[in-house]
Image (cartoon, rainbow, N blue to C red):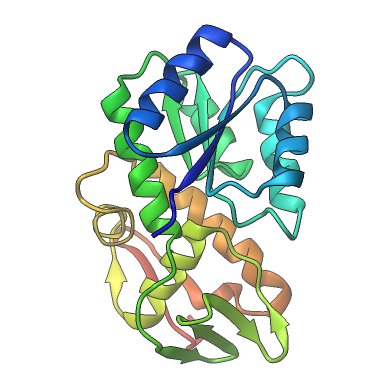
Length: 231
């Protein structure tokens, strides 16, 4: 397996070098950028496997950079972890709704950051096997890591893809937020339950142009269910 490459976008040199040092010791190849302009130039040359993006950058915010990445058809499936001193719950929700796949609050320990990176990379990895899942108008090709409606591709981030894959393989069953966290994110990673709601909204938004958003159903007081049957 080739070495995973991580782009660290952080304007504070000491923090950037500390993160880069720890990641290299853990076996990653690390690229560094001090602002969004350098980050975008770096991605034009080499496509990283994951981005660590500081919220406060000198030329544009890390949130704005993340939104730009998620609008780019060639880059949108690169997972992004937001690094920030903003600890309020609403800030976390804003970061996740802006396209981040995870959110790490400063100060953080190197072990926590490494665990978050490994978890996000696992979620971004293509599912094994060659199963093709069908549900209503949706086709999920696990081997090709692709979701289609007819001849059209549904663009999903890595977490939304895994969430949809789980739902399609467990249709008609209701899962609570905590159960979805365990099954999709993994039981060894701490993620707040409201994170599930954010990714459910992102998944529905991606499916909406294909008239498939209603497949993800909210069961009041219980959780979420995937069903092609109308509520």
